[in-house]
Image 1 (cartoon, rainbow, N blue to C red):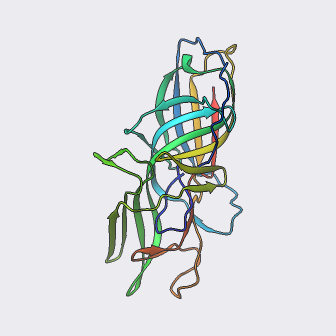
Image 2: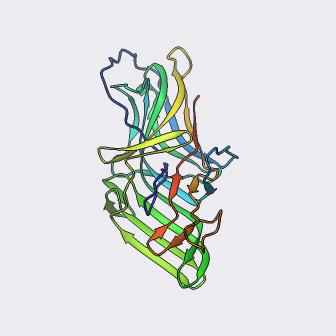
Image 3: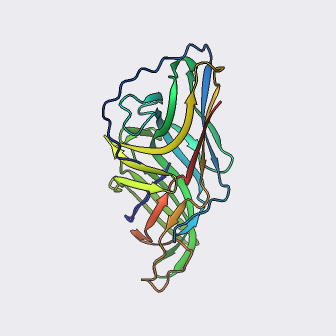
Length: 272
């Protein structure tokens, strides 16, 4: 769910430039007669950030999930597509303890093999962060943001393409609001445990997994992706403006300190 950029806006998640060169798919299909629930959950357990950026844990974080696939290798030409919701993503929560079922699939659609990578397409993000707005005076408040990262996304009843955004700051008597469709979606971005890139208009987030599908074992019933969001909204403090303060995300009308990451720090995946 979310990326790094020095532009005037930002998003949840992180992606890749993987080549899809030929690889046969001899893996047998499962014959299990049961279902697998696919969950996206979130945690804010302490994460050891190793960068030099300032950070905070965003609130009210939600993101749209379009699809999830598993790859055996980085150049897997025939990944296992677990689900694809198309233009109508499932919106999940990324706040501590949130747990959302994004799909239920027949276990028989699984293929035997060892999977090392996951690809998750995120369509949009909603979140709230603390900020200090500067103008005639400096005011502490909150920023509420909505950003679309994948084209062809149904959002609040309207079809939106990548780059649509709604920005709102409120604090004291100060209110700043902007809506547009020109937010520059980063073509490539990273977090500590994932990477993201734009692929055919989709914001695809890749993260390593270590999953075995063994058809000789009992059918699994749960695939869980737990995303760590501890201080995952990260920015570069700037001393160019005298009113800026360290450890505070400073914004002004139409600009802000550069956001270097807003996405999951780590993705832990289990199948059982």
